[in-house]
Amino acid sequence: MVKAIFFDIDGTLISFRTHEIPASTREALAALREQGIKLFIASGRHPLDIFPCVNFPFDGYVALNGGLCMTREGEVIFRREIDRGDIERLIEWQRGDGRFACVLAGEREMCINFVDDRVTRVRKLVETENRAQIVPFEEWCAKARKGVLQLIAFFGTDVEPQLMRDVLPNCRVMRWCPLFADVVPAGVSKAEGIDRMLESYGIALDEAMAFGDGGNDIPMLQHVGLSVAMGNAEQEVKRAASYVTTSVDDHGIARALRHFGVID
Image 1 (cartoon, one colour):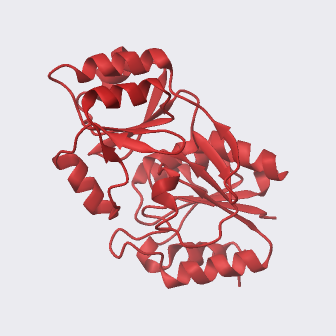
Image 2 (cartoon, one colour; image 1 turned 45 degrees about the vertical axis):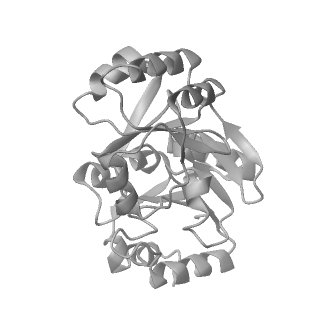
């Protein structure tokens, strides 16, 4: 029996085409709530980027790819920071010619060192407002040293192996877009966040279901009792899921829930 369902946001709950939650998905969410099923967000986004776009009373939030887990009331039940040594190496790298735009995601705020074409293109893709304040480099360094839960790093796949080996060895990288990467502490994932959330609510893993479409969703899709990949997902993501539904724009969530008899 399904007692908890976790939803990715971009490309799963929200369409890249309309930048909205489809009406069929909203109706499905309401039907799930009527049954008493707990509903959670599981996203790479920071809470500052979740709440403005997801206008629905979810029971909790697995944010920053599992690095920050919160209840609906805002109580933090889990958080993990990036290794301070990795932060120092990142700062030194950013002083050189290979610097890249990088958002520092703390528990309650975000900031970015500069904005370039990659940043602009990603913001247009997900249609988010500029909630990461641009700050001077030395201020960016000072904020980094106070503690970071996730980096939203706008570097390409060509430099990724060197960066992760030489600069951020205590981190892992997750992507759903070639323009940027989410960099989180080693061991952090949506799967880890789901475990923390389920433990808090007293729900077993085999009673959990998850929906996703991106590379950062693979850990949770492989982890929960029942997992669904959206039709717009890449093949690697589809292979990680129990079931593949139609796209977010073709009522994918509602179709899958009906397929498994979770809703009528």
